[in-house]
Image (cartoon, rainbow, N blue to C red; front, top):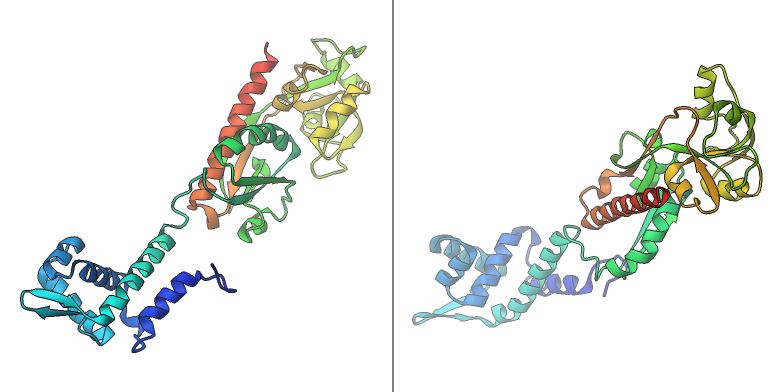
Length: 333
């Protein structure tokens, strides 16, 4: 149970139980002193407590003296050859153990992640192209690997991506390398090349597409920024003194296959995604060399060492590698 500020009430009550009597100054306590108190109260024997703490007997006796001063109570009283626990110490023992358990859990938080038992949601910002590669893997593998984990795939805003990650709005971004702010950590997840797609039975497209025919046909172009009619393909053509007619510009990759399938427009398209449509569309080699592009996973320093976030990154990389291999294997059957 938590209070309105988010503190675990059991932890608060444990601290209150230790400090309420005689109002112990919290500044006089540290974790090592609490560990010593826990060992002494459990063993009720200085030598055995020293062994448990990996300390010498004099050092443990010194800690007992400090604890007696802090709590204004003898805690352990010698009776003959034995040490007897005082009523105050008896009341403290379970509370001290609870506090130590809570502190250890707090320190361990973020250092381990059990996917099978975790209850967590992640937000991944990426293009519809990457979403199309990721979604099948996530829908099939995630319920088995991490039944309590949910993942939201959202469109990226490259102008705000760093701020969104710093604020915790998104956990991970998978973007074109050119669009990743330099302040973010990054890891390459795939390098992609382009092919040409056209509808089946296109009257002017065969398995081998000439550069002349490529330039003569009308194109649909993907412009993530929106409303652009020029891309890297046009720069490559211009370097050869050539050009093409881009009749239609769309902002997302997934809009292109239906357009191509129902028209005579062709498109320069990422190969992995194109192979998913190989049964419905013609997928042919581009008649000129086109630049490749690299997609990277990018994340903020804020989550760099978090175990859950590391798990997420590994699974996204694994998913894209697996789906990419599958797509390319299918394409060559």
